[in-house]
Amino acid sequence: MSHHEKTKNIKNKNGFIAALDQSGGSTPKALLQYGVDKSFYKNDTEMYNQIHSMRSRIISAPSFNSQNIIGAILFEMTMNREIEGKATAQYLWENLGIVPFLKIDSGLEPELDGVHLLKEIDKLAEKLEIAVSKGIFGTKMRSVINKASEKGINDVVNQQFEISQRIVSYKLIPIIEPEITISILDKEIAEQILMTAILENLNKLPNDIKVILKLSLPEIPNFYSPLINHPNVLRVVALSGGYDQKSALNKLKNNNGVIASFSRALTEGLNVNQNDEDFNHIIKVSINDIAMASLS
Image (tube, rainbow, N blue to C red; front, side, top):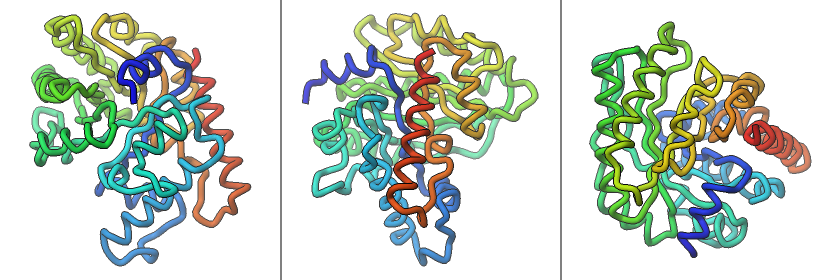
């Protein structure tokens, strides 16, 4: 598995990064959207079996391929399982030509200064070693910003970049995700503070260190252009952040050089009761639409 080839694909290829990394907190919501309510599972193990079944079905769909998808972010449990008899990350890269990433965070701290910092990541070194051994290319960590708080936003960004230093020491590429909640009234001001904080941290990095930034779609089109063009940034990707698919795609089209990394908006319309023909058609349309919007 060539690290150089994966880097080239992420930097230059058209397409988007699929986010299949719902964690313990967001899994019930993702399953409910898929038509699987709590009567389908009695405990966490059964719940995770259900979500793995959903993810396997998505990854196995004929349209889930490297024509439109350049990467996929996995939950740890998904990485440790198999698809068609192959370890998931290996299957993604070897069978589909899709670059595998791993969600590594352990959730969020309670809100302080208008933000949720990352909880200390459980067994980070061990997690990163396993990721490398499984052929994972990069990692993802998500913090949340609920207010245009200068202190809070700087704390979020500084924490993400500090942890990223440990990640790059394993030759993994970090996806830094300081998500701004889309419904807050001071979102535009929060974006200005966030941009300044990210640029300050990027400018301290050695030339050979590359990161991916995963950001909420901005209020002002092309606001994040300075980040896209920064020499330490491999790619800027956008989360859907609660927008429905149509709204997320319209916003994405207004941001040149930003590609999608959608979770909820990718799986919109899929249902456990659909036959394979209907399921595969819906995911195909979504994948094509998201890839087209990522071309702008």
